[in-house]
Image 1: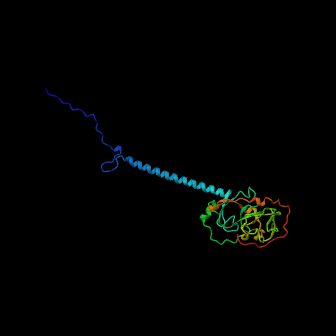
Image 2: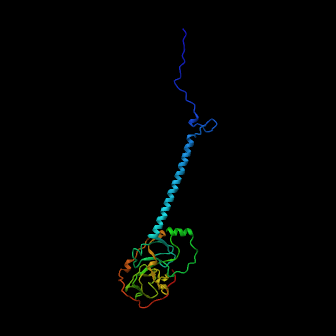
Image 3: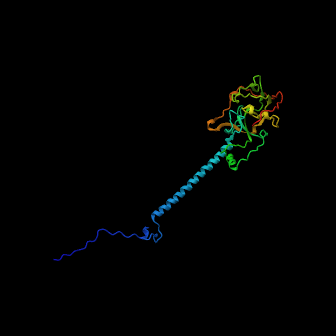
Length: 288
């Protein structure tokens, strides 16, 4: 009996050939006919776009931080603190040449000045010689303007307040000390070996004015040296930029500048209508 054989159908379906819609390239490497790109190419493009967006966001963030820093620096410089550079030794050893200091601009307004304060003031009375140095570049001017660099214009002076409005300041008593309203001063901040003053004077500070002196009395052209000028050696309170508060540079001198209030604790209030014994237009040491 003849056997009949039946061909079994395969249980496995053959995989369909890749079509153009699957994104596979043709044998010659050309893109699919319908213009679709391989998945790897699309991923590369997306990665590139992400990098571009990330870099742009980073630049935007940095720019925002810089703008905020400049605005804050300008506001601080305008209303709170301002940086200055010390060009001379007239305040040694309290302040030394090349020190950078921060000045508190809340003094004298809204807070009052005190005897013993170190103040920075504009030279409106011609105490300083005419400036002959090279002009400051625009970039540094911009940094000074926003408060990121100390003012090196050399049109400011820094001295210590000895007499307030109404005070009578005299040099000197029998022991060579300054007196304010009759009270002798022991001045520990003076430059070692320096006398309180080698030049005698007797002044009463007018209303709205100050009598100022450097701590290095033999090298300071302060109120004493400018008594023959129109301002008679007095400083207008309106010219005061502020009170020196901090030595910021160099780092080995970093620290606060405290007012030696104990030196002036015993000074009484000025007597109304006090008058100096005589004017004292005596030349004093040269130097800023």
